[in-house]
Length: 78
Image (cartoon, rainbow, N blue to C red; front, side):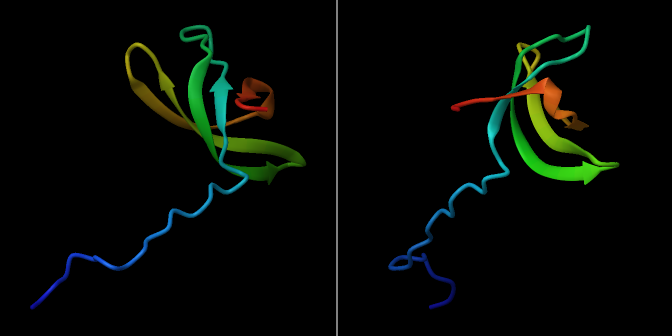
């Protein structure tokens, strides 16, 4: 038999890295928000931290991914 169903093998879900957190994103004048998002990565640029964030502008359902200053983010669940 070829292939296999994967039965008998456990595929654990790894824990969420601490850098990936749900957040609220404040938008600009056209879409002030808050918008639900998730921080994907942090980087230090020119002695300042910025976050790569994916967020959804509702009700349009537009997904945006961009680097943002931490002042535009509010952590969820803290």
